[in-house]
Length: 398
Image 1: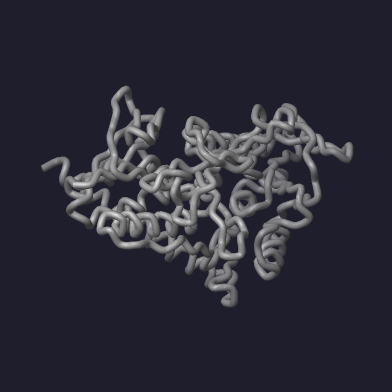
Image 2: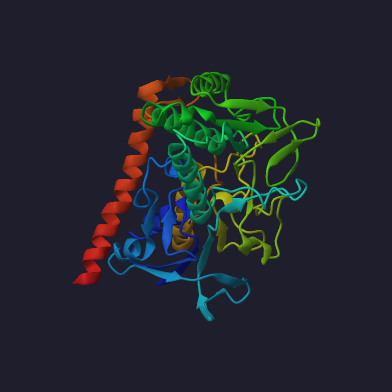
């Protein structure tokens, strides 16, 4: 029986376990500091109040029980990895392994060179920060509703720092919600402005012209104010100060402009890039350790043209499937191929029942059709989680 430890219950970690759990000669243990799996790709809808907590978080213990005894779950923080002894320390205990998969993901990189950014903004990489931002957003709408016939605060600005995938989706969903609310609470909802800010000269700088063009048009229709080529110098409690001397008054800010590897990477001596991600081998091994793999956002993954791929759930799952296959091959003594990474397509949720997407580089869709395609992908993933959880719950109460 081979022991496989998986550190991190994100998209990559769960997909790796699903791929390995079918083998009877593999014993799997999942370790995560949180007791839940966070569907971060749906955070935009949760922040804007369209989704509820149960839509974006699922219990990991019940999920693991859904494998009927072949997968164990430990709720705890993996504090130390000893490659030589093949051991991981967690909850003051030591676990041994034959193969280790590090899938700890990433966290928001509140750039230290922007003074006051971390103290005065929220991120979406953790459920807690997304939840806190949702509360702020709902409180702001409530305040506007209360002041509808009285002393109004006037226009209020919400700032979204970073016009990549996450920033665009959050800005679009909030703007759509506000547009919808204007029908019920009146013009007070229209006094809340959404600003999307990025230092790049365009939104979605790593995406194709079609996606950028259609997304920009949709954001403008929703009333999102786009500030590109805008370099933030510092942030205080009331204003975002730009390097050109201008400033923007704001009520609260969400920052999606960058990531860095999670804390565990800092404790491991190995080759890394500037944001702490592992620079792995072509087979996604930690340098010098053929039985230790890194997948998802905690590792720098490049395509065949040596371009760094975006830290998406799709890339995390593809790397997880490859690593699971490679572990099986190593157990069987079969040579493994290098990981060939690519992005099959990308959908961007743009408020309500509207999305934009490109598939396989040549199929381009927008509007309700793109929304249905994105919804189908998300629903299939969530349904798989729910079925596994239901099985696990039933197993536990027998």
